[in-house]
Length: 362
Image (tube, rainbow, N blue to C red):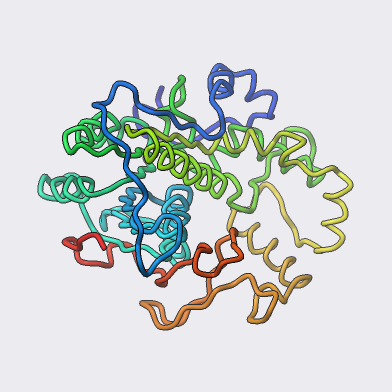
C-alpha cells in the first residue's frame, strides 16, 4: 500500500510462476490480452459510420483522437492510429518531464499541445477537444485521471449528452483491477513483476534469481499495439451497433503473453545462435536498460547494416524539414499492397507542447 499511497514505483523480481501465483497475477490472468467492451450502462447512442475523406484513403481518415500519455506505450497507441489516418492531438503538460528522445519517433503524424490539468481553463480546453473526438487515450494509472474529471464514466456522460459514442482507451502497468491496479509503473517495473527480467537473466547464463532488464521496449510496444487494436475493434463495433466502448491494455499482461513458450520465448538453441551471430557485448544486472539497448543495436547494425540506411531493404521512411531537420523513422510495420491505403505518417514528429493550444480538428 505504500507504493499506492506515496506514488512509489517498484516491484519484486518474480519468476513467471512466482508472479502467476500472486493474487494480482491470478486476477490479471482472468483478462484477455485485448480487453475491450461496450459500456452497456452508458446513454445509448446510434451507429457512427466511418467517414469518407476524398484525399485520404487510409482506414481511419476522419477519426479524431485525443491522447493524454507519456513515455512509450501510450504514445504508441496514438502513433499507430495516426499512421492509419487518424487526426491525433497529443496533450502534455510542459511542467512534467518526458523522455525527449522518444518524441523523435512517437510523435510522428501528430499535433501536440500544452495543457496543465491543475488549471480549470486548461481542463475546459481539454473538454472542448474531447467533445469533437472519437477516441480518448490515457496512459496514467487508474483513477488518477478520473480525479481530474476525465475518467471513463465522465466521458461516457459527455458522449451520451452529445449523442455520439466514444472509445475510451486506458493503458497502465498492472491492468484494470486487482490489488495492484492503482500502482504506478513503467516497462521495467512490469518486466520485474511478470518474470521477464528473471527470464532475461537466465538466458544470459546468470545464476537462478539474478534478473537483467530486457533491452528492448517489447512490453511497451506490445501494450501500445494492443491498445490500438482494441480501439480499432471498438470503432468497428461503434460503426455497426453504436454505443461507447472501453479498451484496456497493460504492460504486465503483455509481458505474461510474451512469456508463453509458444508465443514469445526462444529456445536455448536459438538464444545461443543469436549470441554467436551478433556477438553481443557485455550485458549484466548492473546495467541500465539504455546501456543494454546500445549493445543490442551495435550487434544488429554489424550484421544487418542494409536495414539502417537508404536502399531497397531499408526499414526507414524519410521526412523533409521539420522541427528537428531531416528525419528518418522506422516505417509502420503493416504495409499494404495499395500505396494509397497503406499506413504511413504524413507529417514528421514534433516536440511535445509544440502547437497552439487552440488548434482545431482537421
